[in-house]
Image (cartoon, rainbow, N blue to C red; front, top):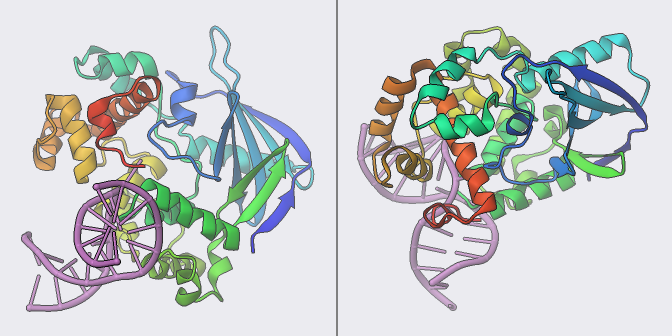
Length: 324
DNA sequence: CATCAGGGCCCTG
DNA sequence: CAGGGCCCTGAT
């Protein structure tokens, strides 16, 4: 069963991001589905974070003024934080939310690009971001495979119910994905009982890889993106689709994409060409020519923008491609 | 009722 | 390198 932890001690870290910066675009991604892992409430983003063995609860808000962007991280913990912990948490947040990103080069291109200009105006300064560690995100991408959003959420819920950690702070409850070692003595069959199907083997094998240090996120952060790609792809259950998400969202590779799944290709095809059936190959060639090293970031702006527009007004051709 | 495909990936030939 | 099979679920 899941662990329950109440966090009572609170402190605050304020971080000044590089410019240009967009709070909503960076901390809230309309294209991502809702789960018990991240909670959005009245302008605040809540989620847990693990650093080492410790668990913290975050409450994130926009602290920007007229002339300066700031992000406010309120941090709940069991004990009062040491300076060391504050420093480590701060560094981790800068990484996960790409707060030191240098995207001025992209700003220059995007503001003048016919296809990007509207989306860019609305989201100028948005970056790739991730609330999760690499391991945690891998667990998410596994539950995304070959199924509908509804079932992905069901699978994650039952996994969290059994192995996750529930943290309570500031009158909210959110879940954290288990640590890989949590599954050391859990078998593939045990996991299968949670109705995750063939994904049980992937969850088990990837957890083992992390548990016995075959792969380590901090080491990967020091390596070339090419090495990262190869090492993560070698994990059982990671293919061309997941690796794209990972290189962009976890490792902030703005130009990394060499594959689009059919449902994504249809959406991007519509945004670029006004029809649904341009092949993924043509799309990839086109965005390479047009946006080069910024191509995935550019697609991200278009993607989040269209999902955001959809949340205000129905977009029939898009609704057809999205099955909840 | 049965059949089918879904926000991929592995494995086989 | 193409294509079948995979767990389970809800839609038809």
